[in-house]
Length: 94
Image (cartoon, rainbow, N blue to C red; front, side, top):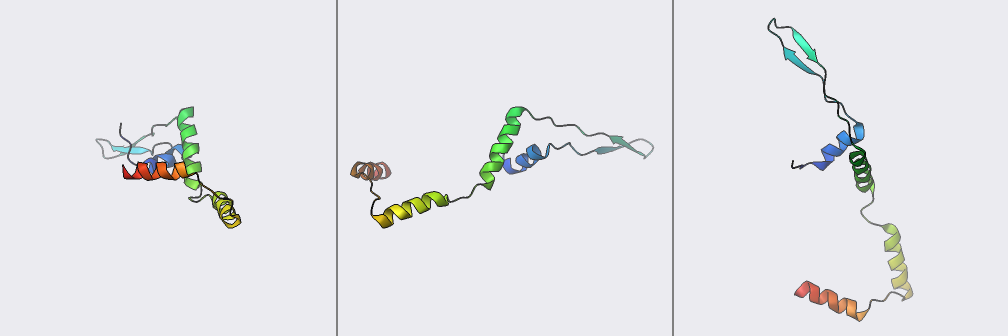
């Protein structure tokens, strides 16, 4: 099965939803009520839902890391090894 919209699935996982009640027309025109199917999630699916929710609520920028590097740059203590710079240049060029 291919799942394209994870966000809508996470809403189902987090709500423990029950599929809506369906109605069917009978021969006499009266409506017969069919109870909906029940969705039971495995512990893995519940865990996935919790992790997805945490990721969606996490900030895009880790302000603590930004502050740490700003402080190191301001103090003059931030340094990067020349080998790392050269390796990054070569990786991006070739």
